[in-house]
Amino acid sequence: MLNEPNTSIQVQSVYIESQSQPEIGRYVFAYTISIRNVGRTPIQLISRYWLITNSDGHKTEVQGEGVVGEQPVILPGKTYRYTSGAILETPMGTMEGYYVMLSDLGDSFHVDIPAFRLAIPTLIN
Image 1 (tube, rainbow, N blue to C red):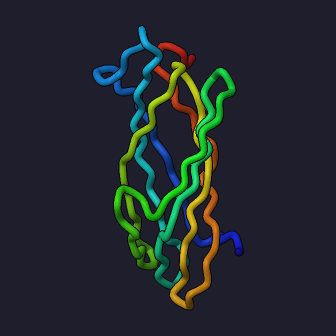
Image 2 (image 1 turned 90 degrees about the horizontal axis):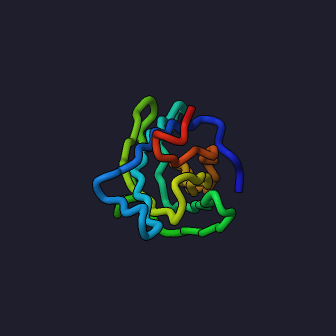
């Protein structure tokens, strides 16, 4: 499986205070990911892999088909954006992973998702 340089990933995360319960170790975060196809041919997102690490070092792996119930086809020059969430037992952590994509020729390849931070705003300087 190849890494694909023709895809750009951008991530924004936010703490959802209204759904969190710090007193019982429940910290809810939402993240929005933008996947831009900067190549010349359509690509399809087939599956995802996440490694979620909280600030205690506890790691959770998540794998599955598509994202938010979809396996979108992203046309050249277009961006697919979705929002999802994660729940941590600590007020800070990280997420990283990759997407498995399919080219229009039927070749699968990985698109790396760089590590990004999940943290309540009071912890970020």
